[in-house]
Image 1 (cartoon, one colour):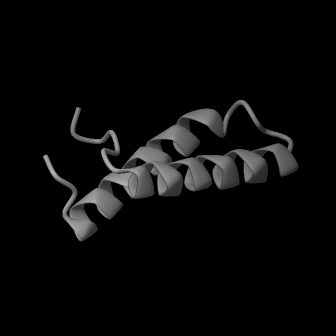
Image 2 (spheres, one colour):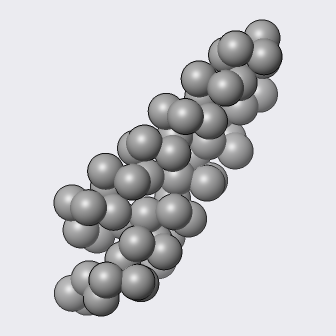
Length: 57
């Protein structure tokens, strides 16, 4: 899967983005509507970290 992070650094960034988006959704009172965007943005952020730092394929 191309959008799954491969390196530990990418997983850390993806996890942080997922938590931040989920927390912001919870603070807005819409936690469950923030789950899909949180996972999508987390996966993209992790993939960009892998692209930027040349994770082994």
